[in-house]
Image (cartoon, rainbow, N blue to C red):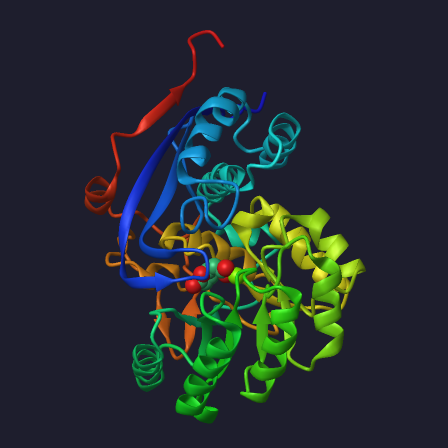
Amino acid sequence: MIAVTKIDQIETTILDIPTIRGHVLSMATMRTQTAVLVTIRFSDGSQGIGEGTTIGGLSYGAESPESIQSAIETYIAPNLIGRDGDNVNGAIQLIDKLVKGNRIAKTAVETALWDGLGKRLGVPVSQLFGGAVHDRLPVAWTLASGHSETDIAEALEMIETGRHNIFKLKIGKRDVRADVAHVARIKTAVGDRASVRVDVNTAWSLQDARWGLRGLQEAGCELVEQPVAARCRAGMAELARGYEIAVMADEALNGPEDAVEVACDRAADVFAVKVAQSGGLKRAAEVVAIGQAAGLGLYAGTMLETGLGTAAALHLFATVETLQWGTELFGPLLLTEDILATPIGYRDFCVEIPRGPGNGIALDPDKIDFFRRDRGRTVTAVAGA
Ligand code: MUC
Ligand code: MG
């Protein structure tokens, strides 16, 4: 009889880590990033770790760090304890049946399961998804200090040091014409040495967006991310049809079902595929497949995860044949401290895919102790269950 590796224990830990500068988004200014870490212990002594992270508390989406933790502790973990840890698909299907929404909470648990399975098999997570076809990927940086001059200085330094030559500017907080002028100043300063994109995080009305897209494309900006509300698919389709600048869906994409609707409505030229927003690596792979089949461009998005969630995402995106718009998997670089024992490599305008079993990374226990909000909370197998 083959011994089953059971899920014994699931522990969640909230970390609050300061950012290197204020990160000004249309809906919030981030000075701290909060990550929910999940550690799963299996009956053979192995472990898997995962991360569920959102942006700006509840200002970005419906899940908060605290709701992610409580969804895992109250509704997900008790249903997984005692189950086969090697059957990740079985766990995903069970949790999808029992828990609606809560995609980020599901992501944290699912990525820990893949990490555990990869470690037990001695293979990287990318191999569980069919194998990596890249060992590094282009990586954008987000300019979001709130000031054009500071952003320009930051961009020029990134170009000089070979860190980034793709910049995403966070706009939508100011008047649309002031935002266009800000983007034009930065594009003029970087010239042909870098490409410039913007993320409006849903802040514009359709009317604002018409002005905005015209001005942005004249300024040499190549892509606009989620200019209008997530539910405004008809507006996104009008903008995608009406202007040369590429229109990318982000907040509109919560998993494969949304991906089908956005693709059918031609409500974007590009998908920003976020693992957390998709509901995990498997669902993100499905969003990728839908985008590919619909002939859309692909971009690997981020919820500004620490090195842990970033590594998990890198393993999936390393398996994707073409990411026409690259990645923005720079999350660890926005934090004052890296929580990994060995940080992910960023050089030559690229991010390197970590090597080794599972996610190919290890946490630095001192950093975890330092940044944890409170003591780890644990759901353990009940004797006899
Ligand atoms: C978003 O909306 O894409 C990604 C990069 C960044 O700076 O913020 C995020 C969120
Ligand atoms: Mg976005």
